[in-house]
Length: 282
Image 1 (tube, helix red, strand yellow):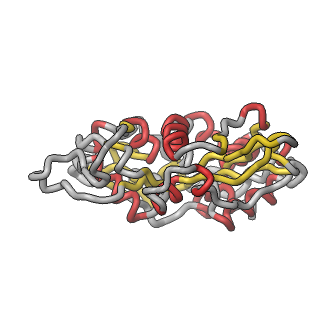
Image 2 (cartoon, one colour):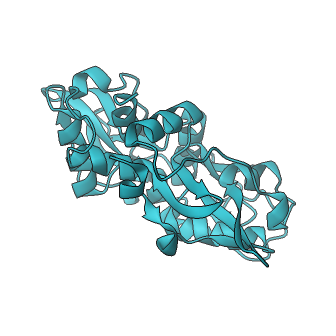
């Protein structure tokens, strides 16, 4: 299967244009729950692909408002590349979205597009989940305030946390999407480091807010201070080690999730992420 068969075509790709501002990007990233957005510029010769603006760039240059100065060059692929080739590129570069470029932007291929290919049998999905799962599992406590849990995801450098209750049993899943869904964009904040927690709260702190390895600047965002249990996904989907990568991919597509806890009996023993399915193709 080629990238052309899996990608989102240019007509369906939302981009931001130069000239523009960081607020254009932040609004898009929050609406779409993506980690980056393609940047284009209209010229006399037509549309020109300029690169990507990511949450990382918004954090690295918190005082830079001009979109053109926030653009990063990123790896690209061609429509004729195979799904396996683009999976290898994603794993090697740590990118979830790869622009498809041939002179100009032709589309975007994502990790989810590759997972679709695995789910449909268009890419190899025979590996067993027990062989591809990560055994290091990030967890958060159900009563942890959401801003603290968000920082825990940041330090772990993963976009999820399996939520544990008072007995240490799984009771839900918290993802960066859950955090982004309840974050509120604030216009015109003077203090760029304020937490919405009360200053006397034991959980309060100042600084940059991060979600997994995809960041949001606190100068523009407020995150509710309620416990994780109020914002997590309670309908927890699990999988066993004998299930195949294709079955895991089908579950991810059906449930619109990016990771599935791996269990043995009732015990949590690992996590199968969408990128683990890609690594099985490399």
